[in-house]
Amino acid sequence: MSDHSRRIVVLGTGGTIAGSSSEAGANVGYTAGTVPVTALLDGFSAPAGFELHVEQVAQIDSKDMDFATWHSLLLRCQYWLRQDDVAGLIVTHGTDTIEETSFFLHSVLQSSKPVVMTCAMRPASSNNPDGPQNLRDAISVATTQGATGVIIVCAGEVHGSKDVSKVHPYRLNAFSSGDAGPIGYVEEGKVRLVRNWSCYDAPFVGNTAFPLPAANEWPRIEIILSHAGARGEIIDTLIREKQENHPDAVAGIVLGATGNGSLHQALEKGGIAAQDAGIHVLVATRCIAGHIIPSLIEKLPLSTDLSPTKARIALLLQLLKDRKELVV
Image 1 (cartoon, helix red, strand yellow):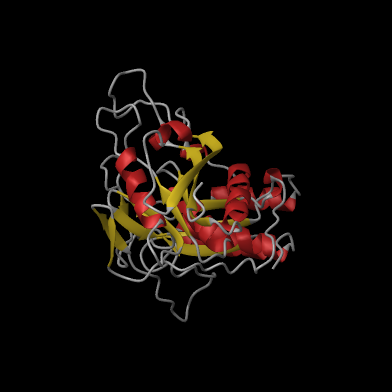
Image 2 (cartoon, helix red, strand yellow):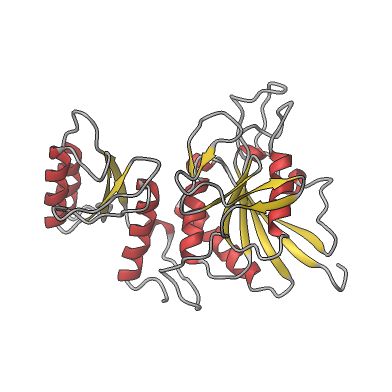
């Protein structure tokens, strides 16, 4: 490494970007997480003054993302962000849960250096894979002066972790940040910002280490969506497991509300009963855009600005903090 070079560390976790198919050129029906991250970076070079360092953290389909992988990824991010010669990180990831992993890292990391997550909607074996361009764009973002926070780069768009959601199952630009919109765009290797970088917002950890319990000791939190004809039996079952001290009893429930935090009466009744039974309950809207505007008649706690999946992560981390298993 040159005396004046700074490293960009690429951490691979699998996903479609590392996927392949036995059917030549197929864009669906592939197996995710089969191509090593080193192979994905073959032929890539960093801009002048930077060098790439590659490490495989996991090799999974992101639909199967788990706490153990999050823990391993967090530890490697913490390690590399502490290195003086590391300018930023890139994490290759599957699209299905990238918004959850990015929000998790956003909530627990503190650094001025960027953590750029990228992905692909087509496997590496496709006739027209989108992963290589997404990787080039991620390198451009990671080496951009002033870049900071945990961000997602896909299809030439730069999204903040708190706002972004996957909104399409197939097209290449599958992500949206709702009302907020993208942070910016990558155009011919240059970043054009349209709003401020997504700064770190790590409410669950200070400047010290962030230890976590074993993956099988993380609190169990379920998401239940409100819908026409919703029934409360699922919540009744969760309450019964809690009262019977089931070893894997639920610790929290996130209710995915319709509209401005509204719940089917059966779920609202069940949520109140769960709260009375000692289960933490949080309400988040299933609407992609906008925030919940609280009223004076709320019967359950609200997560006004998070999707149900991200509200689940926030509740999970809060419960860990309350159990004093986070160092704050």
